[in-house]
Amino acid sequence: MKTDAYTKSVLTVIAFCLVVLVLRGVDLLPRATAGGVAAPAQELQTSRPLLVNNDGSINVRVTGLEGPLNVNVAAVGGNRVYGAKVPVEDNK
Image (cartoon, rainbow, N blue to C red; front, side):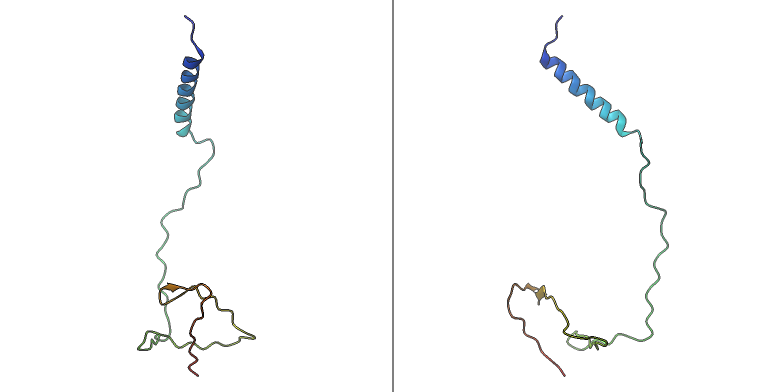
């Protein structure tokens, strides 16, 4: 019996798939796995409470800044900003 090229190619694909399935279970190189369960992180303890204003803002004092402060605004009030002017209030 003569086998044609189609049968040879189908049998070659089947053989290749079987080899792949067998080699999937063999670890030729050691796998990188995570370590054991890490201890829970300690909670951050602050020496004083964080004061929040009625409107939800927080007073911030910037020290040790020389020159202008670069501020990149991505969104204001949940809306993205693309080149539009952003209103700034100076509460000095």
